[in-house]
Length: 192
Image (cartoon, rainbow, N blue to C red; front, side, top):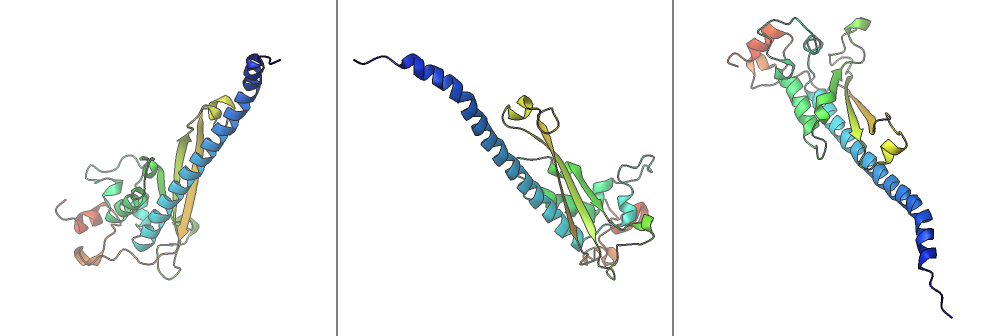
């Protein structure tokens, strides 16, 4: 005699389904995190390569986030070297449109340590860091309070390169692409 076992299958499925969903969501999230990290890494690598070829002056980098700047300050990204670095970071963006908004350009051994690193004699280094707050795709991050506890995970990639050039550009006045300060920027860009 055949018995109906529909109820038994339903109970078994009720026990197995949460585990299957947990594994499935875990695979999706892990793949998404790997994709985001590799995208972030590529954007940072592109920016570091451009920074090695067109390194901005440390004096120009000091303007970033500074308050009380003169009214004729053209903006941090107005410098050709800084703009090129940001554009390089944006070149391979796919789903993450705001990667370059959290980009930091620095010289690891800067003048605060008594050493100017923007020279070709020491070759170096310039450092690009991009930080990105990744929001999970599935409810897994919120359910288990993973990452920051709010469904997000902080990713950070830093790339360091030795300087290859000091921002020489034959199309600019005096052959210089990078501005040291505001007045130097107006010399390079006489008709902004």
